[in-house]
Length: 425
Image 1 (spheres, rainbow, N blue to C red):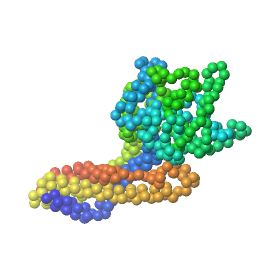
Image 2 (image 1 turned 90 degrees about the horizontal axis):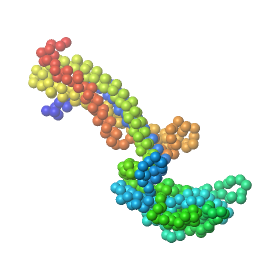
Image 3 (image 1 turned 120 degrees about the horizontal axis):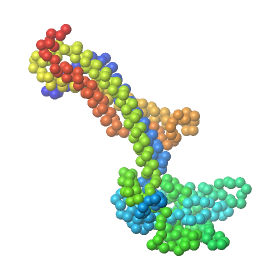
Image 4 (image 1 turned 180 degrees about the horizontal axis):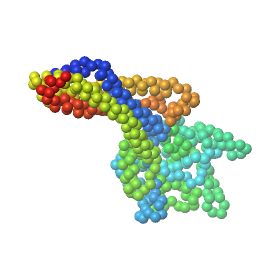
């Protein structure tokens, strides 16, 4: 029975092809607008995330002690807190970051200042550094450097500052550690054995990493204070979550403990919130076009009822129920929305390809790229990204709009009295 009603509804639509095309065209425009506006925000969000850093950077959480002087029962960053972090669900690893207090590198005549920090060598493998040169290892006396750590060297005796790039793996270098306590400053020279350089894409691109116990010993010399593990407090702790999805709950749990947190994950959450809001706003703009199309569908269905009043009366006279008539007209309205939605998907995909191909073919650095809100090189040729689920949602939305717009006219047709309908001119 339902199959016959579908056949009848399709036949009725094709009796007025021009009206079907024009009414579906309104749905087409609304559907394409919704898809493209939402897809634009997805493309911009993807490009913005790529500009933040690598996927591993987005899972990093930096924990800092609570520096609020008015806070009560302030938690401290010590070994006990570190053990708590490592036991938390969603944490892949946690390591304290112990910065060297006063020191620089010397390679030949050039010197360079950068972050020199100690990490727990036990978590080195979990940090997933990719070797650009040498090996990634932190055996006693060894150090590794970020791929860009050797870019900021210079000759201190030169009259003008000129940056010098040093290959810290192949060039012998020394670590000069300054001691500022006492009546006269002094310095200690430590031969630095750099065994590897890791590729850029982490928070340590410009850093020199050593074993944390070795940095603690150097800080003892710098500060003149002996290391006491019971009283020692970490400046900050680096935590890496198991995935981007676990960053937010882990961050919330750490903040609840009273610590401050930071990192790319926090910025990513704010970024996602911004683009989520933008997606709703732009999706709403596209939905206005669908709303206008809904009035077109309602008008078309109302006109169809007026033109086919006698036909409706005849259907009821030969046994069609109110539900049958309602179903037929709802199927017609739904097919109008569905056909417009499918056509809108096709148009959206076509426009997506045209825009993305245009972005790919724009010469980088030309004035033609100035209208873009982001560096075209970050887009990867994908300014508009349409996920499959968005296409399915758009078709279902367009069909729903057709059904919603056609409900009242269909209900009106179902409630027509057969006698009155047959007498209609």
